Image (cartoon, one colour):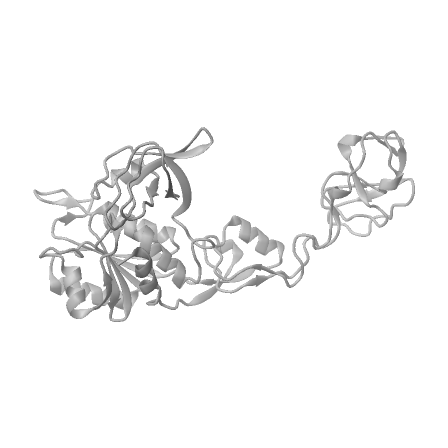
Length: 397
């Protein structure tokens, strides 16, 4: 089926996550579960954006001298009012004295014998007006927003010390295959190092989840069943790696067909065509291909949007693994009959335009191709990517 249809089916098989209240000091990288409203106006009062003099603009001409009547300091209130022919020294953030309507910056003035001489015209826009940024009761952050340093600073500015966030989803990872060996071990003939679970774990963390490793298991229906049962009891989502294609030992597909519930199997995507999605004892499960590039591409295309969805967010407000951009191909890339084609390319800025190069071969087993490139093409089905052509791509981040 199409990628879009696969997403729709997976979205309809969601889970409800709990929420928790935490301080903003703990909130970086979390998703809001409730809107945040401001408890104050920002600014709370009219204040100066610069160090200088609070003056009446109508009194000011270059060369004029104004009488200094006092100082307005940040953290102090009730500065002396400014009348005709007067100036009040003022610091950045300090309240604007009554009567003043402009700020003469310190660099454009000369202070001598209790008088300030105007060297350049003052500016009314150096006054920050009460509530010009946010107002009391205003919704400043929506539910589903990913809290970055900017959002956290805004929450603090608005008087919010604690926020309600979605609990991190627990995602179990199961890797399958007799040939797999942990990277800490020594290889024997016919063995390879298991890598997918570590890359998938990192992707889960990047998407705000808590990965739980169940290690790699042998090609045994009994062991797979036992592991799936254990994972379903402990997690919001199960991800398997390998065992979903057409081979005799593709046991994930087999056990899901016989004992689980498959919602879809195979999508029109290259690389990564044979993933499955379903439920095991009511726990959602994504079965990813065993080839490392395919597993990563399927995670980016299917699993990441699903995780955003269950956390009440999306790629615009929540976690993202890349940004959609327009790039001009410098090298040709092959398309795929009937499938969206996500080839690896390296994107960079060249002559004020984003361009894409091919640096290595495109085999789905070549994880190095995801290291030496930084983007994925989004070639529509039955479309070749020609050198010089402008195409859509995902610039990975």
